[in-house]
Length: 153
Ligand code: 4NP
Image (cartoon, rainbow, N blue to C red; front, side, top):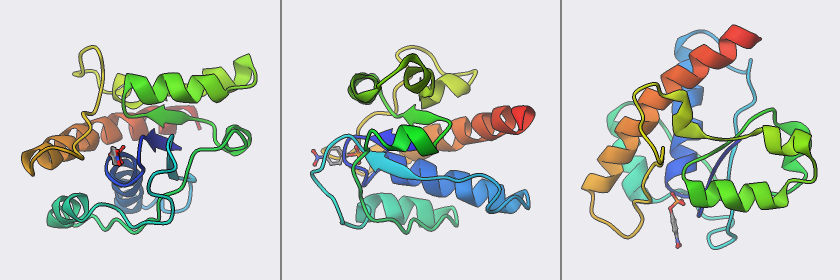
């Protein structure tokens, strides 16, 4: 479960990129991938057109409707991967137990080249270059994440 603030830019991209990479490895459907937002600002909306455009350039199709993260998601997902430290704090606040808390990680910590604070910057109020940066960061961390997850399953 990938989590950002609005679930219209960063986490739907991570969601789509990981599904795309799993499909390239012949592993479609083997891992349940989803995304959500800590806020309810954009519930039901399609992902940001600027994010969809950048993803499409790399052959990645984002087809998602924004939904809010819920406490019950801890029961279904093994990993809850946040895009920044603020999302991390918000999700940790919803955890009911140590077992819930252990599932929550900052996504970029999977990328050995990432440096603190391990954040995918929020591109929403910035220019188009921000979306390219987000794509590059998410793409690199996604490979590392998949390698790590496949090692333990
Ligand atoms: P996201 O980007 O968290 O990557 O989906 C944002 C989208 C919308 C808002 C903030 C961040 N917003 O404030 O509406």
